[in-house]
Amino acid sequence: MTINELTTRIQIQHNQELSAFRQDITSAPYQAGTPAALNVARRSVRMQPVQSVGDDSANLTIVADVEGLAWFTADKGLLGSCITVSIAGHRRNTGTRVPLPLAECDAWIEAILGGSWITHVYRAGTPIEGDGRLDVASYRLFLDERRNPVAKPSAVADNTLRRMEAS
Image (cartoon, rainbow, N blue to C red; front, side, top):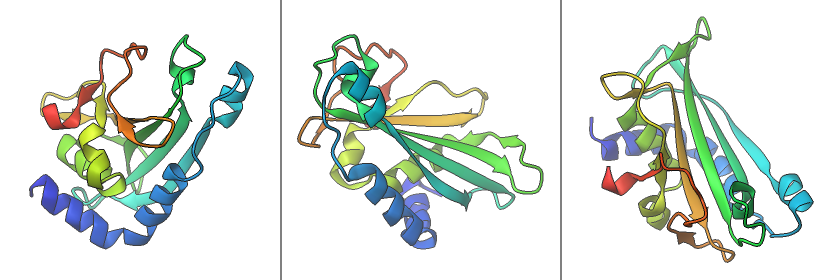
C-alpha cells in the first residue's frame, strides 16, 4: 500500500479523532515570554489509542507536544513554536512495544498535519530495525509567530532532523 493509500485509509477510519487532535495541537498560538513562562506554556496532547492500519493486533499511541521555539535553544527571545508528534505501537493483548513501519508513521503524520504543512515536517531519529521499522517515530513542525510553517531554525541544534520530503 502506498503512503497516499495509507493516509486515505487513516482519514476514513479515524476522521473524528484526527479532527479533534489536529484542532488541539494547532489552536491557541504559543506566546513568547520569559523563560519561566516558556515552560508553563508547553503542553501535551494525547490522542486515544487507535488501531494500526498495517497491523491488526497493534494499537498506536500518538502524542503531540507544543512548545515555544525558545524552549529548544539558548535564544530565549526566539519567536514561534514547534509541534512534536510521537507515535508508538503496542500489542493490543499484551501492551508490549511493536516496531512500526516508516510508511505507516509517515501516513499518520500526513493525516494529522497534512495540507501545506506536510512539506515542512521533519522526521527525527533513525530507524532501529534493519527493515526501516521504528520503535518510536517522532516528527517536528516549526512555526513562526504567526503560525506559518518555517524551516528548522539554525538555533535548533538537532542534527537528526531530516525533512520528510527529502527522505
